[in-house]
Length: 156
Length: 418
Picture (cartoon, rainbow over the protein chains, first blue to last red):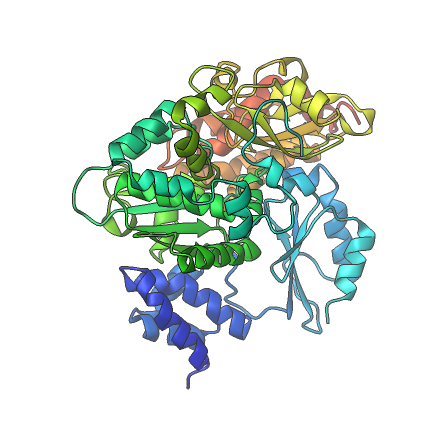
């Protein structure tokens, strides 16, 4: 049974004019599918494979290369704290430890209520406004612990 | 933001509401008039103008842009222009600012570049994390398309999905094609066989954003903005780390030394501490010590000083931060981001990180320092792309310049400053 919406398939069709090869639709398809479902379960992988007329293993081959594609279930909110050099020089470890303590999980884990998945993230490209984190794709910069509290408390 | 003397192309538009709209672009920037001018020029004339400008690639390699364009064969094959907006080198955040504040400048640069190389199709490959910025580009492209500005070129946004290696141009092309972002063997180079097997030019965001003003004002004008030979225009310098005013600045190419950037432009070291090290061009570039900062901040002076300008992403480190820990964090990044194709990089970088972790924790031995150097030497230059080198060069540089710190960790089990 199809899990992806009609809109997904319509968008995919619309995007197909952008590329001379159908396989190039794979990253856009994975992004759109994950936006709908939250992660990429096997039946969704199968549905994408069928739409692109490639083997499901090819879909997993590509998807597993990229850190943003979730091949397992994740929390409702995606919190990524940058701990790379520029953020680390401005206290990123304190930010990450604070998140871990407050949420009661380690980086890479999801809270028991399925609310938040926390990541120790690589450079987000916000080095001049470090420390930084991204929450559900939106950047938060020049962070301090109070701001982190405010952000986390706003996630339901 | 700071304008370090002379004319600037970018910083005056940062942080201005509405700067990203077509309306603002028409009033305050080149406003697609450069693309109209280029439409009346031959492709050779455009390329000559860019060669004359001494514009050198802003993504990290510093290759002269006009020369790169001239490598595209004059065949009838479908050609592609790809903008590399995968900005992921730690310390680098300039392309994000360009996209957020002046997306039309990039689009106009792409229209002109596409004409110069004979491409009718362009892609902007943007890192997946820049989701908001991808939306801004889509919006700008729609505005430009609706206003009939794109002409015969169509340009699309293609999002990556979290992989540093996709900033390497052939890894990027594989990713664009829906594959794993593993770099390709070269030759063939992209100019001959790139995206979808067609001749392809891959240019950085800032590089392409310089093109409209070059066409508008002439290559000689752009070359004259630079203060040293063989480097034209201005340069966006991203300063991060332990300075009082981190941020994005614009200087004439070769117009300031590292000391001037840190102390005059960025207000010196945070908390009145002493400077310890500068990573001049993103985390893959070898460090300079505090007594080496009188070097002019551009490609050739930094090469002479044994480092690199890279993406002009300066990371400043004070005496408060352990350099062994810093190097461990840098190498951990490359360990995580190695695509795994080449054994020296995949295994070597992971080994180097393990040795560094031992040294940092105080459980390393004297032999570990020479072992670390030997592993770095076994990586350097021995893989398909430069990712392994990006770990090996900082290892060699930090150990050479700050060996006492490593020895203190090994012998005393702690930082010399702690």
